[in-house]
Length: 114
Length: 108
Image 1 (cartoon, rainbow over the protein chains, first blue to last red):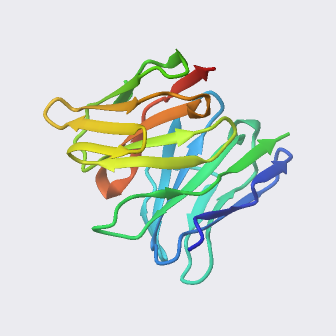
Image 2: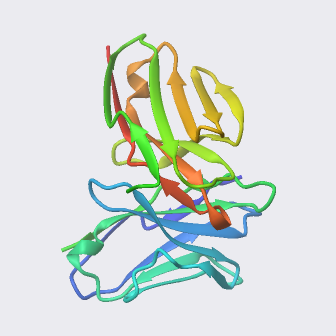
Image 3: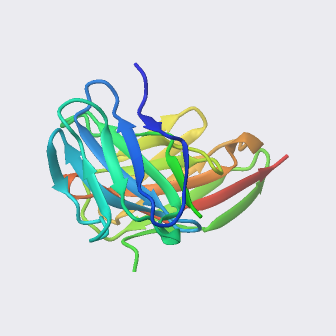
């Protein structure tokens, strides 16, 4: 059973470009979380999705950031018009669902904005 | 004020020493997680616990729900244990609130 997959592992973008980060949860997991780790800071929750639904986006910046988890395919975190402050490691985690609530993390995508 | 506090922030030990990392939380939780992250690396889940104590190899995690406190212990520490250890509290919708991490360095 493959773990949580994220791609790309490293992404370099210039200011103003778009960044698309993908997350494929573990097989059988229908809950996906995105977390961000800014340089020299701790991890912070961004958004929680189930298939085709955003459940909690209280940690998402109000502008430029969006997330989806379609019926088929990976979850996507999209950052439009990136700025240098978006440079961070973005981790997704998945869980199967109650009562199996342990979250399994992907390897992360390290975004660098030039 | 962060809702999850860890101490110490940095910890240096000699190989073989017994290590303790502490975590206090102020939110109501359904579970407390201990995670490990190597520099530049991914995140590995070590423990998820909601009561009592769990043991895996040389690692032991305990939690006191009444005192809202958890500890991670490493027995007979080894240089390969060097990493950042993060505690995280399960909140609503099981989203995690993280401590800032403890950087552990174990010298040979």
